[in-house]
Image 1 (cartoon, rainbow, N blue to C red):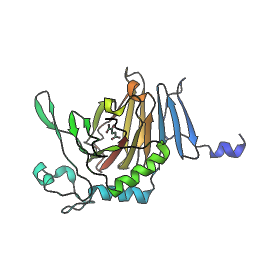
Image 2: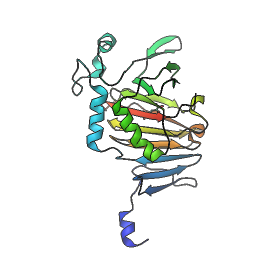
Image 3: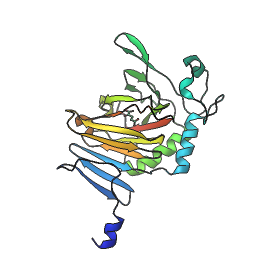
Amino acid sequence: MNLFDEISEKSLPFDIPNEDGYSSKWDEIKQGFVITIPNGELFYAEHFFDRRISDRSVEYFLENNTNNWLTTKWRSLEPDEFSLISFKNINWKHDSINMYGKITPLPRLTSWYGDTGKSYSYSGINSNPNEWNKGLLYIKSKIEEVAKVKFNGVLMNWYRDGEDYLNWHADDEKELGKNPIIGSVNFGATRDFFIRTNDKTQKITIPLKHGTLLIMSGKLQHFWQHSVPKRKKIKDVRFNLTFRVINN
Ligand SMILES: O=C(O)CCC(=O)C(=O)O
C-alpha cells in the first residue's frame, strides 16, 4: 500500500469490537463495507441511494388522496381518520397484536409486497402479498445487483416518529430458509439499528440513514438478534424495507 492508498482508505462510520472474529473491508466495486462478525456477515453502504431517489421514495410511500405527505403529523391521526386515507402507492396497515390478553396496536405501520403466493408471517400476523409496483421494483433491482440474489418479497415498516420502534428478534422464520440474505434499506430519519449476540454479551449500533443499505447474511440470524429502539427526540418519519426470499 502506498501513501495515497492509505489516505484514501475509508473508515467504517460506526464501531465494531476490536477482537478476533471482527473485521471490515471497503469494497470499491460495491461502494460499501463488507463486515465480518462472529457467525455472520454484514454489508453496509451508507449512501447506497442518492438524495434524489431517497427523497422521492419517502414521497412515494406517503402519497395519498387527502393528506399532505410532507406536513401531516401522522401520529396525531386517530385510527378512524387514518383508515379513511387512501395511499396511492403503498397499502399501509396498522395491525394490532394480542399482548397478554390486551389488544395493542403495533408501534409502527407495515405492508408486505411479494410475488404471487408468497405470504409471510411476522409479529404473529399472516400477510398475503400486495402486488409489486414500479417504485418497489426499482429499489429491489438496485439491491439485487449488490446482494446477488433475486428477492421475492419485501416487508415495509413505517416508523411515524421516534416513538415507533421494533423489539428484539431474529429473521428466522422457516419460510426464509436456513441462512437468509436480508437486504434492508432505510429512507427518512436516521435511526439506530442494534444487533446483539443471543447471549447478549456483544452489541453493535449501526446508524441507518436516508438511503443506507444494510445486508445481513451468513449464519447471522441464528446467532444474533436485532432491534430498532425508541428515540423520543426524533420527530420525522422513517421507512425500512427488508427484502427477503420466501421459500414456500
Ligand atoms: O426497521 C429496521 O431497520 C429493521 C426491520 C426489521 O428488522 C424487520 O422488519 O424484521
